[in-house]
Image 1 (spheres, rainbow, N blue to C red):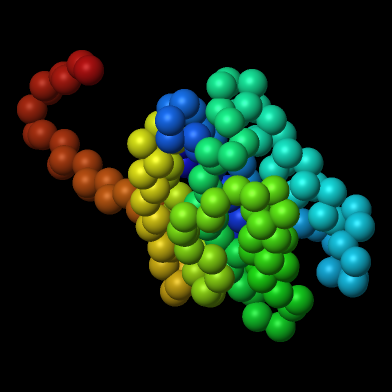
Image 2 (cartoon, rainbow, N blue to C red):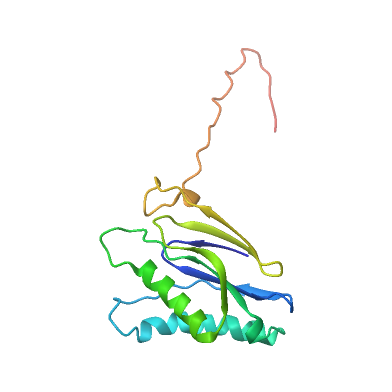
Length: 161
């Protein structure tokens, strides 16, 4: 499974004994007003959806382990929604008794996360900070070099392709 993250958070959760796992990706919208409210309901819904989906596949709640990624502050001068996303995810794991086994939260770079749910292996690739904020390096327009056309021959040759 692969996802791209900026201020969003991805939770990679699995039950190693049952051999099942999954990943979600969420951003808590809103103005960051105290108390959370509806903003946290998006993250809460997706975390519960993932946990319940794993349990339907044979996972046991007490055996779940999680890795969290993302929560970067990708745009300066605005509220730090990445930190709020990360704090929500850590608080959810603690309240639900899910073992937090690692990951990478915060910073100022986007990242690509690859996750293998059965083994629990996760790989993070940080995105280039020099890329324009609206166009991460991963989405940069490809550059192509087109060779100049060959000069026409003086004879009456015809080439079909």
